[in-house]
Length: 109
Image (cartoon, rainbow, N blue to C red):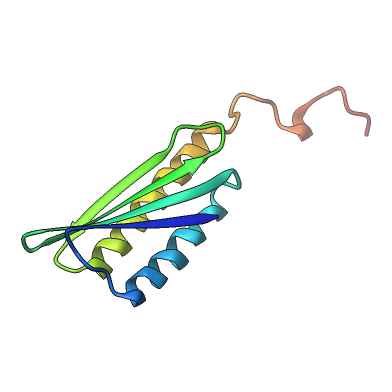
């Protein structure tokens, strides 16, 4: 998965960028169709914001954002939110009305 970074009105240390790449890359386990991610770091006065945009093939992008006094904390929060959103989307996409294979009567025993 390709991860792109953008910094608005701030400079982001390399350690934070590496951590962001690891955490966002780990989100691909929730959906194998994930092609790329954009991570936007922004600083406004004393508030530091992180936004993650996950591009999924055949679906609308997943956008999560968080803010805190430090980029590291905001990054952890935004990854947790994105993971929760991806888990929820995966559970909604599964077919809950289909009969289970074991309960179908047309299978020979």
